[in-house]
Image (cartoon, rainbow, N blue to C red; front, side, top):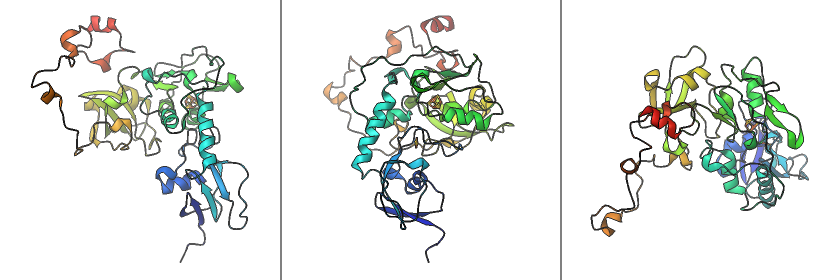
Length: 361
Ligand code: SF4
Ligand code: FES
């Protein structure tokens, strides 16, 4: 017998039942896959998030069983509660596709095109969103916003030009620390994430703002410019930590731990918050009990080359070269004084620079 206390909702022709009070976005996440709208500001682990970015817009083609009228405008699915008998269109709606392309265009108006040098590249939600819904050009003819640089402390780098003002980091600081010292200052196109008086963010749990930031506006200073995320192998590990539950993801290249992050679920959200000590101070394998390789989404660029049993295309170069070594493929260490294999990149303070290599060699 169907449960009377549950509400029925149909999203892109797939029907499920959810408890009253569930948002359309959460209902879509229960179905999973392409039916789930993207979300740049909503974060299920933080109270009050959502309603800022409009990437999760959907078309409500039937309000409910009792009032079947469609909603006249597209709705933010993270802020719309499910009604019994509701029908929603996401990928099946042309209006939604057009609106989402418009939202991406807006988000990119002031966003710099610096993916090649941005530490978030490869795990940036805006990058994925632009890839799926963006247009190839911009119609924006004005100068992009620039900001005064703010130093927010030894661990976290703020790149305000990349910020999309999703407010996730503000909610994180509000809900995880006892005294928030940063927020959104000013309004409109002057709005920026900053500390009012130059101040460092140094609470024990403030490092989590790095994980919640959907773009590269808040990045880890201890990892900056050290490596591309798709070259690293994520491994789940834990330690007995007195401050947090110590369950983390270590990012290895060879034997080196390049960075430590929270473990993320399939929606890109942190499973558990971790403390600054685990994140920034414990970068040695001996600090951790290794559980095993992390599961990454098959489509993620991070899973590049991590799959076993894949049929690789036949290697033809040896055949073509008749067994000779191709001249174009050279060993960089044989011809260059930089990038010496004995230099431990992850131990260099700040971004790697040619002087570091001189002083360490
Ligand atoms: S810094 Fe990142 S998390 Fe904070 S508001 Fe900007 S985009 Fe969102
Ligand atoms: S995720 Fe719904 S408005 Fe941002």
